[in-house]
Length: 396
Image (cartoon, rainbow, N blue to C red; front, side, top):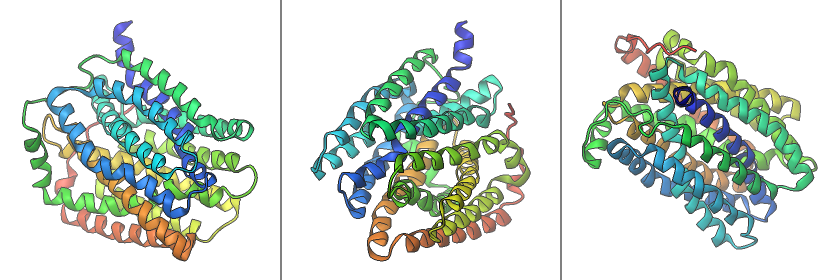
């Protein structure tokens, strides 16, 4: 039974982890707005975590690759993140408390996603699963939770989300005891922290790839910060936010499942070109201030703009990472696609909204996505021969 528990440990972790994400993060922007924060202040709060994360995430990754600390860091983060999140609940009108809480969450929660993603890829390889076959469980749990939790918050008030998040993180902590202490470790070698970063910075193709990833990620980051404010005006705001997030999460399911096949069919750069174009279309549709039905339909594009984006980005970084440095690679990817993009989006996005309104903000991100799509298309043509190597088969 111990072997079976270890075999499905990542399935359990991913399922519960994204329940916790669905219970808190889709509603934070709206919560901040309801507490009286301006769009610019909301942007500042969301940017403080990424500022710290830009420096701390690569350190977490290199520590994991050198000392095999994945399980320990996940345990510490899972314990501390929900406790720190309560700072938002008791912040009141004190902006400094919001800022300190954001920094505290960055110090803890920023380690969770890249470490989990790296472990999921390696766990899938070890046990004969596909990355998408495991990661799709997170989409299922996110969809189920987001759909039901919005109705709960409508009755209890949004302050309940901090307590729900704490409870789910307690369950998540319990799943970590199913992990083997050497969970996912393969190809590890002892090296200095700076030496671990040097191989990534020396790859020009990887640096260009990260620049284009950033261009696509800014739109998603802007949407993550301000979408709940954009659609949350009026009654039943929590229910509407929950429904829209449920639709987007459900759209991920088939694309995570078939991500490996799509990567083999189109290869990384061509697939990311399609992702970037779909993202540009999505942000342009939202910029038109459409009725709720059209907003719901635009959420169906989330499966392409998120699921395929994550699968292709993580897969490419996993292949390009030197042996024993896969967590470092994933933390660099997360630092660019999440932290740096969120830092830019929250500050520039808040300024654009206050100065010109939501439509201009969304259209600006749509243009960035189209430019990135052209970049991925050019990269695909330039390295077409090299990209023909077979993607490792990890089907469900």
